[in-house]
Length: 465
Image (cartoon, rainbow, N blue to C red; front, side):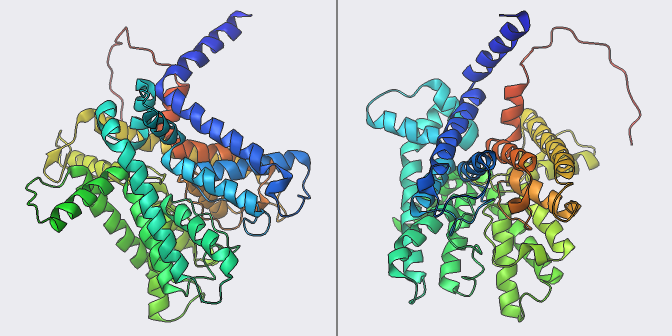
């Protein structure tokens, strides 16, 4: 073994034993298992006409999209996949939404085994902002129970909200599939047109919105809301103030939904809908789904450029920490705005809602947003090169930008570029979905070797601005 091979082998082993390496390896393993199952002939309603390499990439693409709860598809989920293939996608969505390690650790608890600290630390990076060991032991069981309970109630409500003429043999699976997909913010649908055909079914769409919002809030916020609701039902007085995390998540999420809805309503839909009521409904739904889920009730490709730009901003921000959503997260946006406000006022402390934010958290937020911006700029460049030889000669820059941010934010909205992506373009979108689901900092910390500073170099100033 050469010195270079030995060096990189040692780096790989050291990376895998770190919590972020364990997290990446677990998700990658689930994606590979899903791709193998989706590549089976039994997963398809009819034989794929594509070459063998394209079939494998399509299976990997769909598996990554399901595990990373994105929703981008290169094949029609309704017509191209059999019921077995749709069931595989459903299981991948559920496992990816919660995190495969949650299920593995939960099973270990039921068997009376101890959960390794490495599993706790990896799950801490996904779900919590506090100490991993203490929070994880207390919340893991309730996390799974709460998820399955919300999805079960959602499935029942969706089943009852389906039109009376809907085929009864498909109704139950359709309700369960969309309940899991909506709560996990996956955006997969068993309808070829996503939810365009169901947009007139108000009860059905209301349940979808409820599941999307609950799935995008984050488990810590759901736990606090549930605890306070229980206190109100039992008439127990709760003098504890709302946590800062919950206040910022609810405030930022509400503002983004209202702001996005107003902007989309004013931007218009190019004649796709008429009347104030339907326009408000479409604007509200797309504002909710753009940050997390990826369902659509309108033709995204037909929207005006200003509306697409608003959707891009919402997709980049994403949901909240501890949720199934991607993006840079709502709390990161709140901290970044607070930091900019503090700097403009020449203040050292960054404060939010009467609380001072720790310096290390402010720095981590700035690094997260910086890495996300650089990665997406690189993605736009890669897709601009890989999609030069499409059927139209080249893909429009607006479509490339929209597709890249949608993949990174694990949203799943598309202007129609996904099905016609080149082989290289599909591979890059797979990587973007993977990085977006795990978080750019997790992947960056995995790739970059940890080296403590042993020497401090002399300081010198530069001109800026």
